[in-house]
Structures are given as C-alpha cells and as structure tokens.
Image 1 (cartoon, helix red, strand yellow):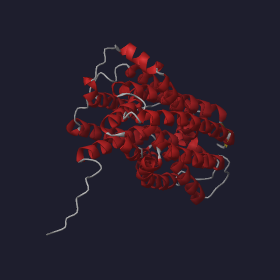
Image 2: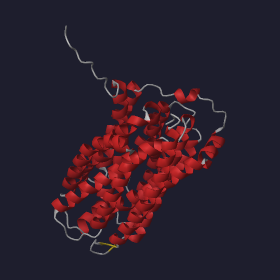
Image 3: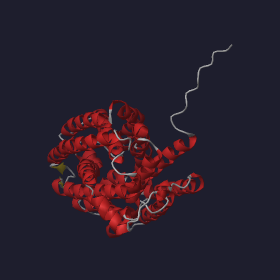
Length: 415
C-alpha cells in the first residue's frame, strides 16, 4: 500500500495567474508612461526651455484630466463588461502616448498629456474592479503585491531603458517604446481575457447620474476617498523632481540614474510579492503602519541630503521604496474591500479620479515649493519633505478608520 500525500491545490488557477500577469503588465505600461517623465525632467526642462513650475504642470495635466475622466466614467463603470471597458480605455491611452511621442513643443506635449490622462487614468480603477470581482479579500494582498510589482518593473525595465533611449535618441523615444509594447499587450487582452460581466446580473435600476451621486455620497466611501487624497499627496510631491534632485543636489550624473533606478527597481520587484503575502498574514493595516514609519524616516533623511555617493543614495532609495510599496499594497487591498459588488466600478473610478486630482494638486504645489536656481540646484526640498511627512501621519489615521470598517463588514462575510 503506497502512502501518497494529498497534492496541495495551487493558490491561483492558470487563468487567474494570467489575469494577474496581464493586469500587472497593463499597469506597468500606464505607470511607466507617467513615471518616465520624472527621469526625463532634467532633459525636458533644458531642451524645451521650461521652468520647474511648467514641468510641474506637464505632470499635473495628466493627473487633472485623469481625475475628470474618472468622475465621468464612474456613472457608467458598472453598466458594461469590464473587459470591454479595459480595452476601450487602453486603446485611448495608446493614442495619447503616441501624441507624446510626436510632440514638437511644450504646448503640444501638455495637450498630449491631457489626452493620455483622459484614458490612462481610468485603467487603474478598471483593473482594481476586476481584481476585486475575481479574488477574495483573503488573498487580495498577494494579488495587489504582484500587480504593484508593475511600479517597480517600470523602474528596473522601463526607466533605465527609457533613459538610455532618451540619452541616445532623444526624449521622444521612450514614448515610442511604450506605444509599441502597449499594442502587443492590447492584442493579448483581446485574444485571451474572458468577459467579466457577473456584476451586470445584480439589480441596479439607477441611471448613470444617480449611480454616481449615490457612490459619492456614501459616508463609508467618503472616508476611503479622504484616505486616498492623503495617500496621493505624498507620492506625487516627491516623484516629479526626483531626477533633477539626484543630479543637481546629490551630485549624480545622467549615466548613473539608470543604475540608481535599476537597482531600486530590482529590489522592489523582489519585495513586492513578499510584502503582499505579509499583508495577508499580519493584517493590511499593520503593514501600512510599518510602511508609513519606514517612509517617513527615509523622507526625512533623503530630502536633507547634499552631495552623496551613488551607493548611499541607492541604499536609501531601496529602503524608501520598501516603505512606499508596503503602503501601496496594503492600502489598495483595504480600500478594495469597501464597495459592494454592484458599486465597485463606480467606486474604483471615483477613487482613481480623486487620486489623480490630488496627485495633480500635489505635483503643482511641489513645483511652487521647490525652486530651481540658475545652477540647477533645487531649493526648499526639505520643506517639501515636511509636507509629505505630515500627509503620511494624517493618512495613517484615515486608513485606521477604513480598517475598522473593513473588519466590521468582514464579520458579515462581505468583502
């Protein structure tokens, strides 16, 4: 008689693994499109002869248009197959990025960023609605961990490659890279993703405007939206001027930036799934608390640095992004548990819109706080760090409120 051990069922089916992978890749292209502006900042400001304030508006233009699109889309987000919505907005995103790739001037680039934001800004909300539809809360931390790897992958793969392309072929070339790759992703979505329309079977007699109004006015939703405002503030304030600060304040060179972003990205990719698993094991809010503490400490140190060796900057960046990833993964999983199934699309769209609008305001405010001298040196960066740290503390309080609500609701078996 043979003693056979029961085989352990895989955590995800092959199709679920495909969904996680393809959504992560979609997020990779969207995040890369946004993040590639940061390392190109120094080159763009020089070639287009624009100020830090104008560059801040290039970043903010995407965020503001994305926010507006999210609010408009919210009323209709739960009335269509989520696959069709994903394909519609992803196609528009590719077109907007194509406009960036051919932009001849600051004004044209500003317009192109607005178009890109109108479509790209909604993709995150559609992706998270799909995740919430297909995966239980108990494993959602792991899923968010893998999907949020896109943030790190955009650094390790996209940003260094984008910088190399920009240094050799001009700042337009990274956008061409994104366009070509995104077309291949779009074809994969069309061929292999199944319709996601179970939410359409739930009764919803409200028209688009009533659906939007109900989603916005829900008290529980409002708490989550306020948390999102504060979460977006910290990330969008420091990011736009990261490359300029590294070059002009820390003394790094353009050739060292791909090394910095690449090593940081590798570390973030390795930590992403581990942090997602940790969120499911110790609790989403507990990980968010730890991530906030790490992030605040690193922001306090980083924003006060002067001329610093590459290895020190890299080490600090790795620790900072561990903190940021912890906050992103845990908060995404927690907030996804707030809406009911028939409201998920609208809630995610509004939440994404608020995130983008808040980020736009934060980026524009950062452009006002930070001042570039004639030598390129950025002044008032420590003050920017203080603002970010205050927002992190308030965000921690708001996420505690969200966590209490999710725990209360989970007792009824709803997530």
